Image 1 (tube, rainbow, N blue to C red):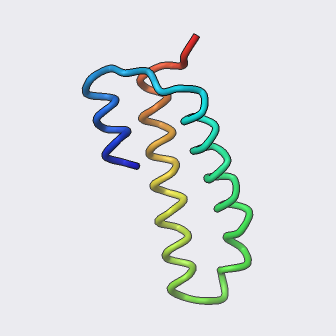
Image 2 (image 1 turned 180 degrees about the vertical axis):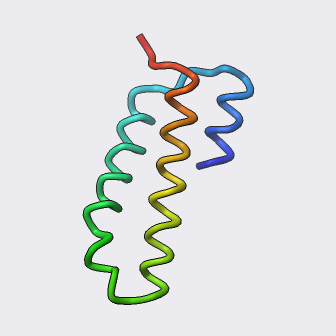
Length: 68
């Protein structure tokens, strides 16, 4: 998903609203589930990495532009 976001940024292809929605819902889901994974060390690291990756993708998409 990160490579798709980078490819879209390089070609200046505006992401669709479906892509924004998917990334936003996935990020929200990961953020809400993070406290439940906090007890397990590796699950905590995995959750943090996923949240950072989704945030990076959302930032890349936002830098490209919002579809009209």
